[in-house]
Image (tube, rainbow, N blue to C red):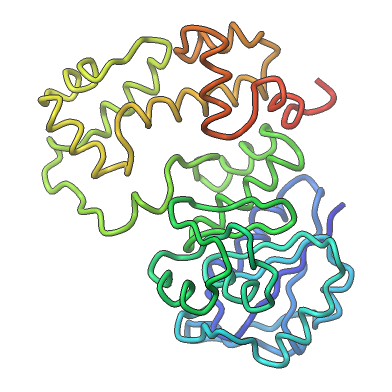
Length: 313
């Protein structure tokens, strides 16, 4: 069992504070989740109530993972308050560190993110870059996994990050099970780009959602741009523009990611060969599947299967 300590700071968002417990705490006893504050006292949230925590900074000493959830943007700063800095010094070397949204500012202020890739909420990018120029900030993703340090973008991307960690630790079957309980997708495609100033279509007839659902049900087909636009009853030019507005990706990019995502599910949950998986998700050859998986998630099919398929299979 891994012990996960969630460090609540003043101004914490209640939603993000509860994410680690909701994801890890329901994972068949694989994790123990404890909530602590920098001084052991109650913490004022960004709402109109306080939260009382059972633990102080001593909880960080025995943690296998520490999560810093989001707190109000008006509290971000280039330096840590002394009690917070002192609490963070309790963390053992090698402990897995995770942040949700503005929690990345805390990790960055310690210097732990210098020279490493990380992300945070896109609205605070200017502050982050000005204060922490050594951090390799990436706003095109929902989360960054850099081994022992993981950061996520705003709000719900904390769910994406925790599900990713759960999948990495205990396989896709358990992660998918928890995602279903939470009524969220086990994996969201794209990054923050799809949420940054993208206007929603005003007319239902201009939505590509029905075509995207149709494509997901027919990934084994070639699915050309003409096929997709024809299903949506739009010109290819209009369809491409609407599709990018609504997903943050081109139709071709989106199809590839969906095929890779479905291939990952099959690699986790079945014993199909790589050739069979490639055929079922619409890649012409196993070589094509390998190339696209490596481009999208950085690993080959068999390596992915060894990492995420439960050992007892």
